[in-house]
Image (cartoon, rainbow, N blue to C red; front, side):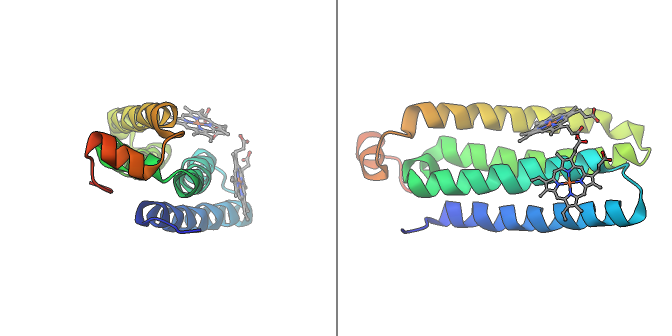
Length: 141
Ligand code: HEM
Ligand code: HEM
């Protein structure tokens, strides 16, 4: 099975988040300080689990990775998730001023997920070739 470049990037990002999430889990377990457990949970779930699913679904249905909506979804997610989790870390360490940033970034992630839902409904049943021929959108533009 061919892995397209966007799915390959999702897999690499997923593995990166997995490594960071599990290291944080081990540090929490070893230190007894669980104050960042919500960061750990969302690194693993928004990062490792969701990104691996984006990669797998994009491998099985390459049309999901094509065109401007998919590119917008990709960048919104990859900007929103690290900003949200970085700001949440600061918030949990006492920097209350970052709260609006958590809100803004989580809205960005939410919008990215809405775009993803739109992609699932509109593209899951069509091939990448047919998408290109009907919309003229080029691969990963
Ligand atoms: C060696 C790997 C891991 C270690 C040592 C670890 C450790 C921990 C620790 C210490 C907590 C805090 C528990 C608490 O204070 O209530 C926690 C919570 C959590 N972990 Fe992990 N974790 C690991 C891997 C994972 C993975 C792979 C996932 C998801 C795919 C995950 C998802 C969660 C979730 C969702 C919570 C929050 C649970 C709750 O609501 O209480 N963890 N983990
Ligand atoms: C923009 C996206 C998301 C936002 C803003 C968000 C926000 C939150 C908030 C505010 C809590 C309560 C935290 C607390 O009481 O300490 C929470 C808990 C939780 N969320 Fe999310 N969430 C998001 C996405 C997800 C996703 C995609 C998953 C699973 C795939 C998930 C799984 C969980 C779990 C397991 C908990 C309980 C553990 C914890 O408190 O950290 N969340 N989330």
